[in-house]
Image (cartoon, rainbow, N blue to C red):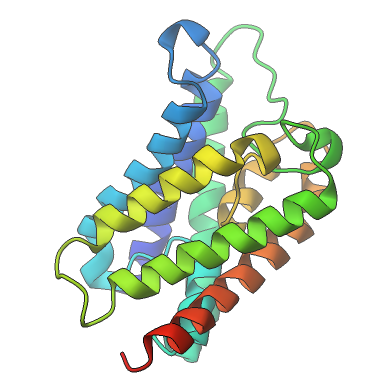
Length: 227
């Protein structure tokens, strides 16, 4: 059970740190964190947890990562559903804590609550097709990087840095498009507390990242050859 608990705690931190920066800090322009600050916050959550729990669970924190690593032959299928359940539970718990904190401010309204969406729920009003393509491609790149930096032939000890920076870059690209998911658990947790139609659009933020994650892992296997 240790690895499942590690995944729950790690995903809790990802959602609390990443979405928390958007809901709490980015709401105050005078703090100056903006999109770049939120992007960095997500990257830092993964970087810090990769060093903290990578040796326990592999630090997936993301159903798309788990599915991708499974497709790439790096993860046992028997652990797939328990990992996903732990990740979603951690994300929901973090969103609940974040809601409790945020609602302590006078006049609080959850609004989008850092949720993901397309059309009217996209920060830049991007279409469903644009968001779908963005999420598939960026999650594919994310898994390609994860597979590469955790390859036995890659320099040891630097994988968390590369993965964290990759996630930061992904957010810098796609926050205006979809508010950046590339992670079904992250999308699910905050959507449950949003005052929008985010729950109705959750299907895309499960399908696209998982498809993209598996695609990226398979492409890496084809490019890299042996592990």
